[in-house]
Length: 112
Image 1: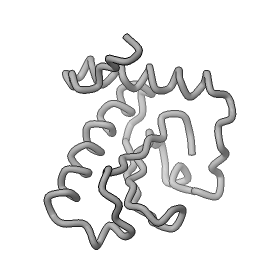
Image 2: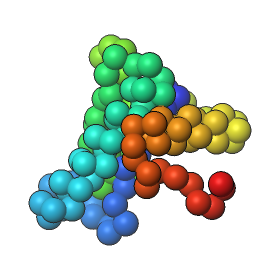
Image 3: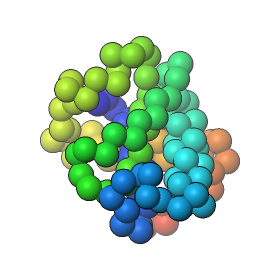
């Protein structure tokens, strides 16, 4: 939807979020909250939006994105990012913000 748009996806395959057990759903929301704090910081956004839509793929996933107004939730405006370096840069930016916030688990040990 915009730079910073991030998905939180559990490893366990679950089609609908309403089928997830409470502990797994709570953990997904906990991770989404941390990501939300990171995207707000990294993109200097007033809010972090959270959406569970469930129509794009048959797997529980939570959309987290920096948002400025309700139009930022319009999925029809979403365009796939084809520039891999832009995606890599956004990941680095989010990772740096999460580390600044104290989320050491955001450290990417594979890339340094």
